[in-house]
Length: 441
Ligand code: SAM
Ligand code: F3S
Image (cartoon, rainbow, N blue to C red):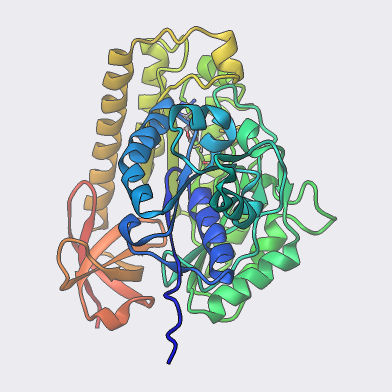
């Protein structure tokens, strides 16, 4: 009697943005078609891919320490690869600093990941592929990191040139996917149990600019919204210079489209926004938020800020602080400016805000956001919200965790069979980070 050889296993460790999570799933799809299964941890894997981010230097340095840690798995024959934006940006430099790495595939080359892995296995390593525009692997919708929620990338790359940002260099020019293909992907995900889809783009509002007439975000949202069985639809990330206000009508009228905007201001100072080449002012940003709230009074807005951009004075920084207090963001992601080689800001401006000042501003902005979140949470107590149950809470298996349409995290008691369902939860208490509640009978 012959027994089949055990299937090979893949482990993907993704850092950075949601697009990387999605790309990790595409690479896992390619390996699945080649007979691989998902490994639960690197120790069980035959192939380990570290899918990286290049947005800040700190993120890149962390990857090198992870690689140093993962290197030991090579002793038992595992293949170790680096993919994503840092791979695209650094290429050979990664193989120089971590010569034990078998393959480096950039954010635009991972469509060839199986061939690259095979070449590395054949001892041709380190195999390096950057600077090529290869279509990504086709998606196998059953390969997912979450049973109920999924991302769908509507485009790749970005045509903006925010002076601090490495993404246009690593991911290339914006290229939209055909709308019919996107709607089919949503349909296939829903047929496989997904109830919430988040459409992804570096700058999602410009979806369609390289597509035929009638293929734009407005039409795409309507088409995806109508897929039977889909319970919630979201989209990220919006750019204030491209935000089309007709989308606010969609958010106000399409019942499954969540009224949640992730629209990074980056700074509340017009002088800094100008040096960032963001293409809008603080006043315009506030006007967009006002218009959004006029259409969706219950809508929530989330932000990204960079602190310590070159030349940012205390007064400039206070502009960001006051923006947090004026807009009342649901959430703010705060990044310390990191000059990225080759970007306009790194070439033109001196990184002149000391690290200690960046750290202090980071903390102050987060504290301001925490105060805003705490007040928002307190105002929600006693009210009832629609919550999508994501599963058990990490801390307490008897407690469920879910999210409101506005992206607030809520904990409440209930059976695990509710996972993937929408329930009405009355808010009974809160902390700065989460809400507590009880299911309404
Ligand atoms: N449009 C993109 C998106 O989809 O979120 C933004 C790209 S970037 C991956 C995410 C955030 O990283 C940006 O909004 C910005 O706040 C931050 N970021 C980008 N470049 C940075 C840099 N050089 N230093 C610090 N933060 C940076
Ligand atoms: Fe980066 Fe600005 Fe595009 S932040 S991804 S260049 S919109």
